[in-house]
Length: 399
Image 1 (cartoon, rainbow, N blue to C red):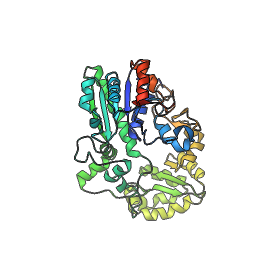
Image 2: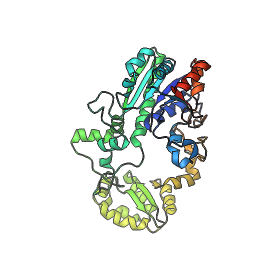
Image 3: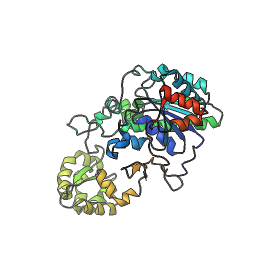
Image 4: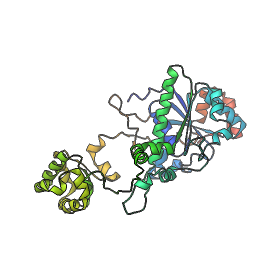
């Protein structure tokens, strides 16, 4: 990827955790000069002994903060505020994901920052937006999974609601923030000036479920948990094979049903009137599963995958991370990059392949305050001023 496209863009990254750091990192992968402003206590996703542990203990911070530089800054101090003011006046984008009101308390809400720099793109990421009735409630990916309805549709039909096991909504909000920032930067090219962007995890969650929520608004029918089955299709679900692996299968059309029966050596089943159409197969799912589940259990996954793929049936193994890492062919389709971190050989880059290549890592995830002096110098501070800031505790470094 020509990942220097945003090289003239400077981003102030005042974020912690997942959504904000990922959004800022995506912009850094696109070439932006991202300056992570880190408070004395540090990003809460960074272990206190970041420099002395192996990758398993700080993988999240490493994965979400590559290609950034880090300035250690006490923004609560008067001198720290003045330094941040200078950073803002000479930057293009500011991203924060503190709870609504925190930036204002620090003296850097959108109005103040846009007054300092009329062309600034000011982006906030929060649980419920900046000015909703829920704005001050604490929120996280897990809480929004619960409140947005995500958990209500995850799990077995007769089981309890389940949480998706990774920060799905954080990542969706991050990607929305990146889209919005790029949109605002494009708008500046036509003279529209800066912009204020308000991204909420709640909105990002509902946007991912727009089809289901629209159906509810139209019908009043609340969708139910369906486990691994797709209640709109049959056969469609997870099926266990003789070697203990599971395959995910989905038969989309009646023409595929004929091919499926042939691949499964169940040709006569194609003429069974109980299963002649998808609607009938859904209606008679239990009887159909009683027939095909023992078939899947009679052979290993690889055999069934070969047969079904030849028949052009939607199918795939249910992998864990070890399975993915061991599949060299699958890895060819992944944006795996070198994080330049000790004991961490690879990480996942942003999934954008441009001009035949993915973004590369120019610098590893930074230590807390690693680039403080360097950044202050770039923003016009003299050596004696910088030394005074360190002595007074206004700034700090990893040294």
